[in-house]
Amino acid sequence: MSNTNQPLLSIENLRVEFPTRRGTLVAVDDVSLHIDPGEVLGVVGESGAGKSMTGNAVIGLLEPPGRVAAGSIRLGGERIDDLPYEEMRKIRGRHIGAIFQDPLTSLNPLYTVSRQLVETITTHLDVSEKEARRQALALLEEVGIPSAAERIDHYPHQFSGGMRQRVVIALALCANPRLIIADEPTTALDVSIQAQIIALLKRLCHEHRTAVMLVTHDMGVIAEAADRVAVMYAGRLVEVGAVREVVKHARHPYTKGLMGSIPAIGHGVERLTQIDGAMPRLTQIPPGCAFNPRCPEAQERCRRERPELLPVEASQVSCWLYAESEETVDA
Image (tube, rainbow, N blue to C red; front, side):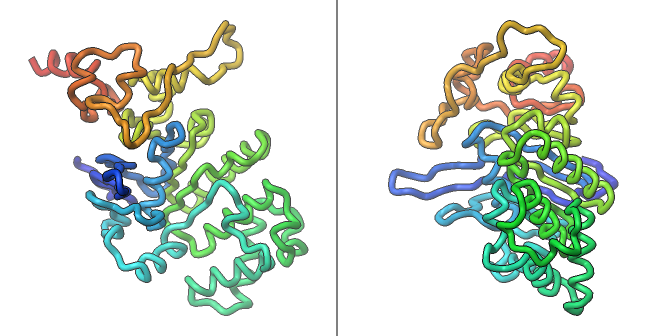
């Protein structure tokens, strides 16, 4: 692939496994993705699709016995998936920031916000405590904490859920990282606060040229926040493309189902689309295309052979429906 700009994050053929007494479970199966500087890549799918596992593999936070069994992860061209724990710790925070679903998991309830921000800044950057506090205050103002100068010495419990998430975003930005992994950053918040957090992430992304991997199950959040989207199902990629393209012209039957389940303002629809069945367990992923038992367009080939990602106009789709058209074009 000829790309003048080297991607900031490059994931090649990633495989994440969990060895168990009953055999090896594959949580992420042969996933390849890239994110450019200043780009928001949305990774979407149901619970169990492997999207959070992909994010955790990037930041080196897979829960044992989970491990990267194959493939590679590169940040700015440098491989990071095989680094020793201490080396990875230095990269986490300095070059990769993280925002999780529940802000209280990222904040220490016993420390003031100023102490947590200042400690993070002085750990990763060569600055004095006074300068670190100045930077911490500037970050809180940047993420929209009102009266930041008074609130910087408050404890996490003194902030509302939306404000705590803003503090976590400030914490993630402390060392000016090149990449942020945002795992369901708006799920625990009400809708109006969600919109503010999404707008904030987008603005910071464009101003700082930070790349963001936005992991969520909410296609509405993806449509609002992301530049490109990767749709995952049962640990595999099923569709990758520009958000506008995927939202307006979803091609994989699973993506069509996701899009059809979102109510649209101004369209009088009797019933929303429903995808019958449930995501298969890791122990029971069917042969062929993992979606075939739930797919309204499944053919015999779908039950036997696993499709690779195929280029379909501006997107890539892992579906045999498009193999014939590809063959016709070649002929």
